[in-house]
Structure formats: C-alpha cells, structure tokens
Image (cartoon, rainbow, N blue to C red; front, side, top):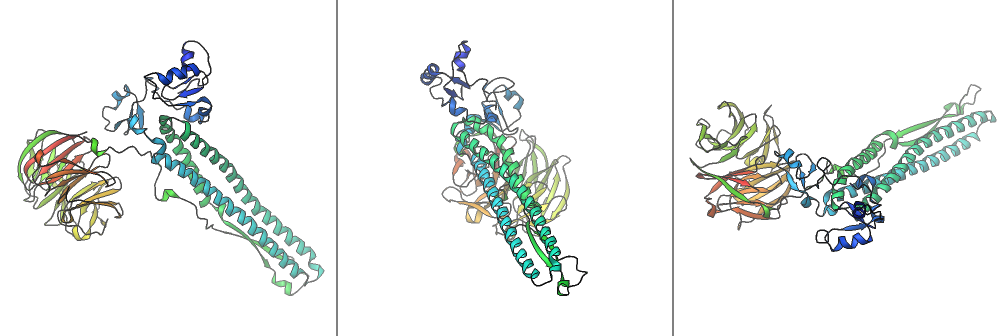
Length: 557
C-alpha cells in the first residue's frame, strides 16, 4: 500500500525529497525523473509497467489503499489460496499446509482486466444505470399521464358544472381542490422516487468512471483485489434497484372521478360534487436482470490447463479381481472395488484387503456417500445398496424401479444412469426419485458431477456429454480416434473431465468446455481394457482399474 505516492520513494529512502512523476505498482512506490530513467533500464525493473502520478491519482482511494504486500509478514503476495479466498506470501504458506487450492498469483492476475469477473462488474454497472434510466422514464411518463387525467377530469367537471345551478359552484371548487391535492400528493411520491434515483444515478456514474480509471491505470494486482470490494457495492446497487421495482414505489398512480348521481336531482341536500379516486396498479416495467441467469458475480479463477497436468504412478496393485465395474477412493486412502459376481472389496492404503462382502449380487458401480458409507448399484434387482464401511455390513437397500448402471453422489442424493429413462436422482433420506434428463443412455453408462454440471458417458455412441442440472446439454465430446467405448468418468477440482476408454485402452482428459483433450495414459502405461476410474479431489489422486486384476493409483499435479 502506498504511504506517500506524491514523493519519489527512492529519493525519500535517501532522505531527499523529490516529487514523483510516475508510479510503479510492482515496486509500490513513486519515482522522480532521474529515478524513473534508472528504473527503466535496470535489469530488475526494466519490465515493470509504470503510470504517471497524475493518472495514478485517478484510481479510487479504496483501491490505492488495498495492501499489495502481506500485512503480517510485510512480504510480497506470491500465492492465492482458493480454499480461503485470500492472497498469501511465502511465509503465509505455513498456515495453509492443508489447502489444496494454492495457486501462483501471477497466473491469476494475467489478463485480469479482460477477465470474466471484471467484465461482469462492468456489465452489472451498465445494467444498474440502464434500469435507473428506465425507472426514471417510467415515473416521468406517469407524471404526464396524471396531468392528462387531471385535465380530462377537470374538463368533465366543468362541462357537468354548466348544466346545473350556480348552487353547485362551491361544490365544484371543493372537488377541484381535492383533485389538485391528491394529484400533488401522488406527484410528491413520484418526485421522491425520482430524487432518490437521481442521487443513485450520480453514484453509479462516479462508480463507472472509477471502473474505467482502474481498467486504464491500476495494476493487475490492484484490479484483481479491488474486484472483491466492488462485488459488494454492485450487489448493493442491484438489490436497491430490485427493491424499488418490487415495492409499491413503482405502482402506476391513476386518478379518476366518481360523480354523484344526485346531480340528476338537484336538491338542497347535495353536499359533494363528486369524489376523486386514486388507484395504484403494479408497474409492468421490464428491468434488465442478468442475474436471473447467473446467481452472483464471482472471480473466475483460471482453469488449470490440461497440458500442464502430470501423473506420477504412486502404486500398482494386483487385485486378483475380474471384470471390475466400480472403484472409488475413500477418505483416509482406502480403496473400494466392485465386480458383477457380487463381491465388494475394500483395500487398505498398502493394497492389502481390509474386508470384503460377497452377498451383493450383480454389483456394478460403487460410490462414497459420507458417514463411512458406500452406495452400490445393482443391475439385476434395479436397486441401490448402502453399506457401512466402518461396521462392514449392509444397512439399507432402495429400489429404483428402472435399469441402473453408473452413479454419483451429490448433496444427499444419488444421481444414476437409468438407461431408457435417462439420468435420475434418488434422495438417500426419503428415497424419493426425480427425473434429471430424459435423454436415453446406453448400457454401462457412468455419471459424475461438478458444481451444477453433470457429465455422463454413452459407450454405445463413443461419446461424453455435459449438461446442466436441468438436463440441458452444454456440450458433447465424440472422437473415436482418441476415445473408444468410454466408461468410467470423474472430474478434478478445476472441472477437467477424466474419462477411461475401454476399447482404446487409455485415459483421456477433456477441458471443462469440451473443446480440448489430451491422452494421459495408454496401453504403454499398462492399461488393458480399463473400465473405471475415480479422481479424489481432496488428495488429487487418480485411481484407474483395468477390467481384470490390475489397479493403478496416480498422484496428479
């Protein structure tokens, strides 16, 4: 954080006071004319970007005051912890030994000014400004309509007035006064809304100018760290606009006149010429709302490039099991495997047998579901068995009334491949079943989840499909030159999709957008008709199982 950006930091250190003409965000100090030249040609700083002090002053104070070095250790930020959503210096790493999401901060701030997060903030501000404009126009139109309605009623009153005795003059005046008072009252309400909106419009204009200045003059790190502050401000403005639109402040005010029927019978008992009514109808104003499609603005951290993934063989095990159809890594490093003949086997971290069960007929896929429990799909009885891996016993069996192959666990539910019925989901608490997609799946399909996305294989068509939680297809990957008869599927912490190709005897990783791929393992690595795999996101380990006997455990970096 800059302490005195008006003076040259280098000269100040030498106890010489000179005004700064440029600012270097990487050095976090200002430079005078002489020091600027030295800074430009010095080996350690020649690649640093500087900005004139005059331009630097345009950056909002709250951004300038954001610390770019660790407040605790007074060292430069070099890493970013995804788990705690905070920057770290090298000394901070000691407090993040259990965090798996430490990333080089220089990778995160690359192109941050053109990042999706910064774009979303700019678009959100444009949206708020546009909504203010629309509401102002709507309110002004209402003022015009009120004035028009008032004139029409006045004319009607006057026309009626000419038909009756002058005895009604007083009543006419009273009614016009009432009309004007009510119109002024409603006018005042609208003017209050317009005053608030005018103030908010000024704030948003200033905010937009600050964003433009940040984009032009702030450093990448300042921009990245400032996004966190701006998200709250933007969210507050959006909530403000939404609250106005949802309140009765934007209801359409109307005035009308209900005339006294006694006017047809002029009598001395007639006390009122009429009555002014005010109606308030909900406004049909259409606001821009990009958040209906996106829950909130988030800083999208760069996705790990699939070309940078490296696999290191940690362990190769001979399981002496045939036709392995399900595999999963359990917390603590244990491995669970399943085969159709009915055997469920749990292995210790050293590969030795912890325990096995032989009473699960036609077991297919196996999934960890929390509380030391695993779920096993059964293709013959069309059911799901829940096994207590701690007490080594079957505790529950649930019928699904459909064919069932691969499965994945998510938030207390098991999503499974139901062939003709597509993807279905069953609650592990009340066993209620809901449809996720109606797309027919072939036999031996597997499924996995990541956030709100679902990924499933379709071996009959050699394809991998990604869809959202409502079943809408986002992309499909199909390339038989790379992947044949895909079965097991899993996803890492960055959304990269790992798929095992049975007929192609390989493991392929597909980028989160489905546009890029890379073969990670092949027959040269010992794969022979592999059928299943599982990526443990907590330990960054990949388990791959051949159809028969051999299972591999890799560390992924």
